[in-house]
Amino acid sequence: MTEDESLDYGLISPLALPPDAKVPDPHTGSSTEAEYDCYFRIVRENPGLLEWSRTCVRVDRELMADLERTSLSAEEKYKVLQGLNAVYGVTLERWVAAGESALEAER
Image (cartoon, rainbow, N blue to C red):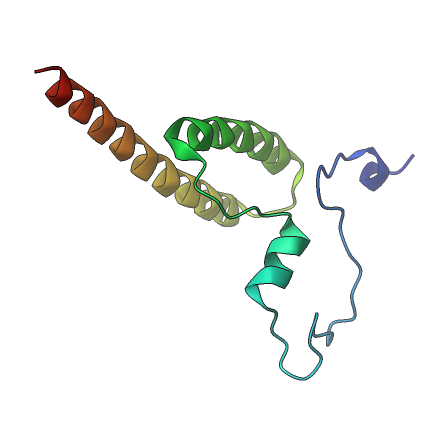
């Protein structure tokens, strides 16, 4: 078994494409939001703060494990973690706002 075969790619396995490929539209090189969502299995809905936070926890756990297996440079890993940190900051701000609203409602 090769190293690649032992990796668990979860939802999306790697694709081999020619360097000049334009997917899915060979003329514009772009895709629609629906095509993007279908490819990455994105469901656009308002999951609510609790469900969003559960997803953040799951993605964090999976991404941290995946970062250990990548060939990304330290700088690239840093940028990925910067992005996650930005998402977590906004999430925490929304939890604080929700908590403050709940406290105001109790008064």
